[in-house]
Image (cartoon, rainbow, N blue to C red; front, side, top):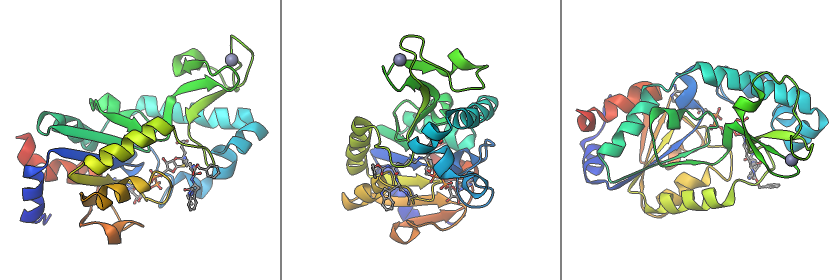
Amino acid sequence: MDISQKLIAKLKSAKSILFFTGAGISAESGIDTFRGKGGLWNKMSAQELASFDGFMKNPNLVWEWYQYRRKIVRETEPNAGHKVIAQLEKHFNKVTVVTQNVDNLHKRAGSSNILELHGNIERNFCMDCKTFYGVENFLDSEKAPRCKKCGGIIRPDVVWFGETLPQEIFAEAERKATESDICFIVGTSAVVYPAAYIPISAKEAGATLVEINIEATEITNQVDYSIIGKAGEVLPKLFELFLE
Ligand code: BJW
Ligand code: ZN
């Protein structure tokens, strides 16, 4: 891998690093991405499974799909990519992870500053009284469960199409982006907004953008460095200097 000396020098002087991650960083853990080869949206309908209208039309089908994905997430482990990002907290003043993923793998890898833009698959909430429920409450529920307090329908705490992102988390992510010296864009197609504004905000505030992906994406022509390769291989190689 040819990583220019200029990037290495930038890394050495960086104080604040931001990782903007997507489904591709978890691909090597065995979790399907949404788009591209083998992507979930190639075989399933985003409208039916990841929208509020889809859920209201058929809550049991959507619930079943999330239960299936939760089972996969529980059986997987963070990979080398997640782990390197977590280890970097020892070497840089500020490391922030802004993730579109709902799989909790950054947390399980040990990262401590994580901003989840699209929620977390391990949480649910009652649509009526907003009580939160962890996944452990419904391990065997094949149908969308009802709230123990008010009888309302319980849904996964994730952000579906057409829904607003958690406003405070998004604002904090924007703040961290504008404070960052380097922003790594890892394993995301960068087509889903407003999440995809995060690296753009970082760039506008002067950060160096580095993309790590197995192929070129919507954002490649705006980055300073594009590294084509798997996150679980590129990240350990790129940071080996700092991890020794
Ligand atoms: C590897 C690798 C390896 C593989 N190593 N790389 C402006 C224009 C047009 C539309 C819109 C717009 N603004 C808003 C919209 C609508 C919409 C949107 O953006 N649509 C576009 C798709 C066109 N946005 C929304 O609806 C958002 N809300 C919103 O805008 O609210 C305001 C509003 C309110 C009311 C009315 C209108 C607006 C909400 C978006 C929510 C997205 N939700 C999902 C599901 C989450 C829950 C769940 O998991 O079930 O989030 S969809 C899905 O996409 C998921 C992801 O977080 C998100 C992003 O995907 P990601 O992570 O980039 O994955 P992929 O699969 O796309 O890419 C994987 C990449 O990895 C690829 O590039 C591979 O090459 C790479 N890769 N292996 C490195 N080993
Ligand atoms: Zn309730």
